[in-house]
Length: 243
Image (cartoon, rainbow, N blue to C red; front, side, top):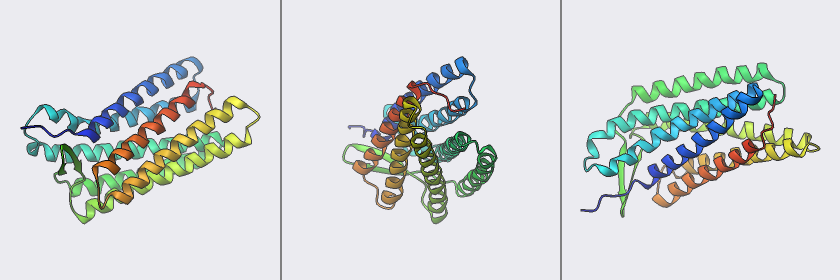
């Protein structure tokens, strides 16, 4: 009997390694310059690393024949993955407010964002259930637990992430254009904003296809995430700290 391949979760593990490399590079930059926003970038990228590691754990089940017994565990991992992704997106938005020297606005955004995280986590824990296992052709993947409240909490979490990435991407873009006389700052801002917009596109695709998922469209979403983080990494390599 051929074991179905958890291709999406394998993709998440690849994204985990990408995020870890970026987190290390950002931390090295922070140790050299001690820039506050660089440290916040490190926090955000570290949270994304955790998120994709949690999402990639089910891929390890390719070595075991019994998937069904772990569906509740996968449901719990999904809650933690949602929370860490939301917090990371909120942190990136706070950094963008710092770029504009609007630290108080950034603090308020962080405060209300964390309330949304708590709300989503509460709903997901209250409605904790097994992940839905989907097998198509020779591929296997898992969707959020069934139920209207799980769909609602997933939607709220997704919208929070989208608002955060669109807002932060726009702020980076505008700031880069305003400082376009400095080519390094401009290019770094363009890389960051492009990465955030592509991450947004990935999130939108998840919301659109969430009601009728397919292995191809879900794989495209994973690919978009990978491209977004590569662009993010290109911005990091310029090593120009907003502070």
